[in-house]
Length: 255
Image (cartoon, rainbow, N blue to C red; front, side, top):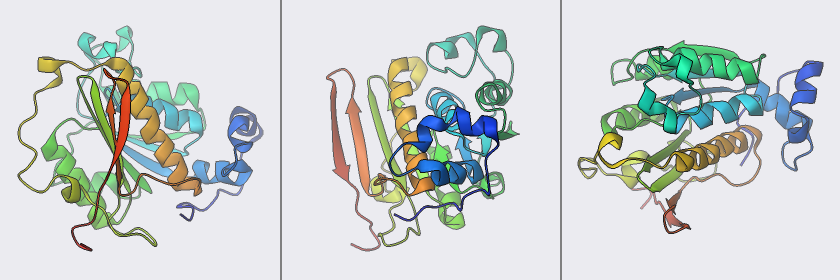
């Protein structure tokens, strides 16, 4: 797939050194690193999956990161939400996430939105982003994010974790040289049911890091054009059994 973002004109000397191990990667190089610096990625949720996504994107050199979350840090979050610290308890997650991002990547521009995303504000909050990463934990929010990215025509990197299990994929309503694949191709309206909450069944913190790293990797590939994105493929992880497999997602429109 072609790179999604045009490269920035240059990187400052410190950023060149900081990201040097990307510059030697096949498929990225110095030009790819400049593409990452020019990219704007919006992340919905700064919790279990969102935390490692934000940290990995900052470390990778993404130039602009929008963080959308209306929650505050609680002690029970810290088992899995690695962007936050004990001293952040009671603070907005957007605030502690911004601190974590800038500590890793001083050149990054961080845009925070401490509000709940819904159908009334989703397009406004996500406008201008080249890619959206949805790490939210409720289906109403996931549907609102998906609808907004479809309207905006930008790729949606999507992941979910519950207990010992996780899923990851990429949705895109208007991809180049590929059939569109959207959230309703995986979960038709009315089929999601009412999954139990994290407080009820728990979640493996290490799995959040694993799936968050995978989602951040999809962002890097889409921005730079490296590799093959998860468009039309759902990765399913069973951490308890140490198994991982893929399911093909086909577009209902092209079927």
